[in-house]
Image 1 (cartoon, rainbow, N blue to C red):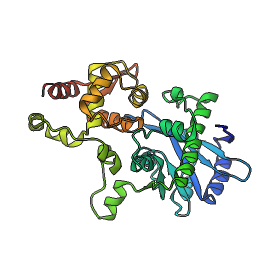
Image 2 (image 1 turned 180 degrees about the vertical axis):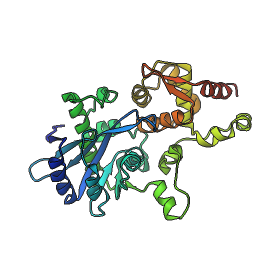
Image 3 (image 1 turned 120 degrees about the horizontal axis):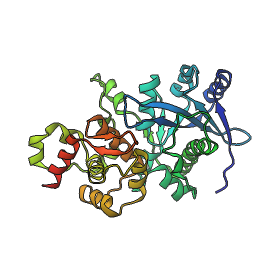
Image 4 (image 1 turned 45 degrees about the vertical axis):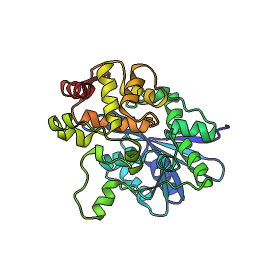
Length: 323
């Protein structure tokens, strides 16, 4: 597939203000972010915010350096404007972090991952969907790169731009196929019902994701650790098993990509044992699962940025294995 789009790096206020005016008058914009330490909500930072949109001449991707000294609050206008559709692949991740770090209430949202799941797709990652429907290969080699370094390497800029542009193209493809990607965060739904706001990342998962994984029924374990059993879904438990059995093998980003494309060896066996054989574990679900495990103190990231189970996590997995 021929890719023809321009890229602009936004790292000064004047450029950002011009971009905001353009976005506010654009009916559809695709949105993506790159984060630092996404698995640790206390250390996490948003490094880049990317927007892809159509112009009269050619599609454009604007990459905002969120670590630069910019007044990002002016992005509130296009992000919360009802007349502009924000297209996101896995809005639970991106929109939640924009809310947490910048207090943006992004809406309305069309989630291309949710649309794929609703249509019955098994491989719902952006990489898989772009390959299937756009004939486009997305190289994930830069995913685990250091997004805090400045200046950014050219390959990092092109990787970030391609993710946003691919999301825009996928949206256009899904609209032609009449898919439904309407998304509303669970926290917003609950707030509208006048209940307490969500505080746990593990509960803020799209309904379609919950339907694709099954809870493991282990009465013996539920008696010993009832809290964990109410929090962890099957995907998170599979990831805990992989990290426990293969300590220090994976960087967080490496594991998310690996489970999305590989289901072989010990890691594959653990996934098949924990999930239904026909249930996929895609990259986005893995990312959410790792964050939950870290938040619950079941896994840790070593100084060399490798995943290991904590004593609490290893003990929990051993109890599961013995059942």
